[in-house]
Image (cartoon, rainbow, N blue to C red; front, side, top):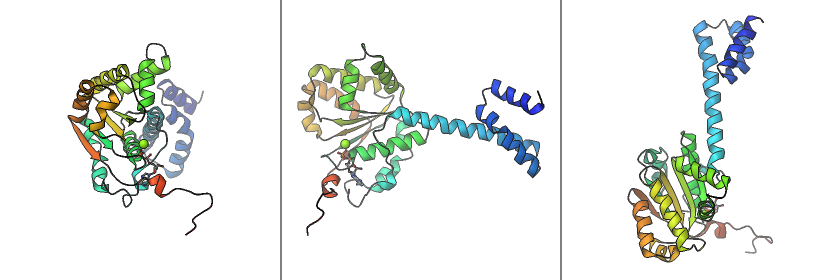
Length: 251
Ligand code: ADP
Ligand code: MG
């Protein structure tokens, strides 16, 4: 074995995979540019750290299970005026996650609640946080099958260890009292430890009807709202306003 092979073997043993893979290129450049020992060592370590960070971000992005990826610069604040760019921009530093604050986006369909939740979630992943996105419907199914399905068990473990959980579409489909109870238990477990973003097409006054019990509703709301920022959003549906037609515009 020559020296390069020996170094590669050592890097392999230390599990510095990217450094090992890029050693030849780095060596060639270092010889050509007469790089100092210290600079060369720096470059090798930097390649490894950069690759690790990129891998862990990709892994966290996959784990988050976003239905699609959206970023804030694609959001039209001219169309959606009930939240301001400044408000959302302030949240982009993710300090609220450090304090386990919740965000509640309420309002009618099509006004950008899911869009904003996803773009905040993507930024959280970007900054190193673990995020888990799930619709309320999926969440209830997952909670009900925890004992039977390893997939559900894994998803719930992910939710419990996340820094931010996004529960989308609370209030869309009716749920039973037993399901409301399962949701309450989850919210209780996350309370004060994990940030939650909730989107809902129902105002809080309609929640008791959705959860089927005023006491459970009060207990859920209590925990969600205690440390939270509430966005009561209004406006026209972006989908309806920007709908695509087959025949094109006639006017
Ligand atoms: P909601 O969750 O409130 O029902 P969505 O976030 O799903 O609404 O938005 C509906 C559709 O309209 C999505 O395709 C979304 O990308 C788009 N959309 C909504 N609001 C905006 C906006 N202000 N700027 C750009 N796209 C928007
Ligand atoms: Mg939505």
